[in-house]
Length: 279
Image 1 (cartoon, rainbow, N blue to C red):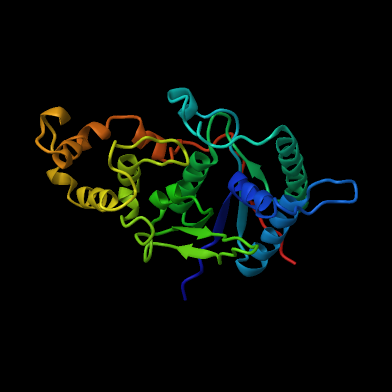
Image 2: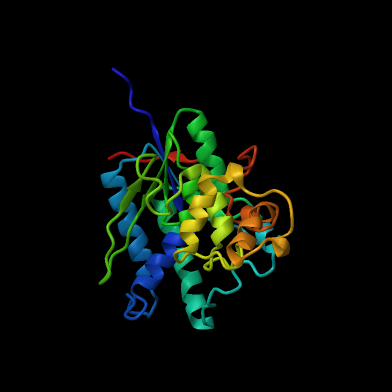
């Protein structure tokens, strides 16, 4: 009988904290002293549910640390995101402190590398752990992680509660193409073409997510061996042809690197996931 593979769960920390913090922003949970505990309550419930339902062998909580290389290469990266007011920022920062205390009580390590986003650290740990025979589960709703899905790497979208509740969703090789319409190995190409408004990644002009352009992007990716490699966009006849001729140029612009989860050759300095406690 084949022994089950040990499981490593990697949680996209700030994404989950933001989701929990804003889920009840209109009527937040507060203590008698007025401290906003919505995020702490949401994360605690999430951890209890994850440990009870999934029973991971190893678990790590991954955070962004400092300004990433993407901000340095492209100052407008994520510049369109709405900033929190001073009061909300203070409440959010306090929530993060509380959550780190909760994670310590659960014996869940907080992992991060200076100058890298959680996506990059998760990508590094996921690929290294999968290569060593672990079954890796990335806990996040971020579409960028679809590029990592493979034989030993799956994705768990934790869903959300509240009036507009969304059930958690499991994604592996069998259904990885459903959301974006392209397989994992083409996700970076697709995002480079259509761009990402949430991160302010430009993509290729006039080739957005709405049909028919998004359909054309998928078609171009599926037949990328026939994409034009010479000539300038301005010289191509017709709008569609001009856009198509920019395919190769797009591959050498900044957009693909912004959409790629960059893996480091070593996870030194990342910390290590610890075995979860068993009752």
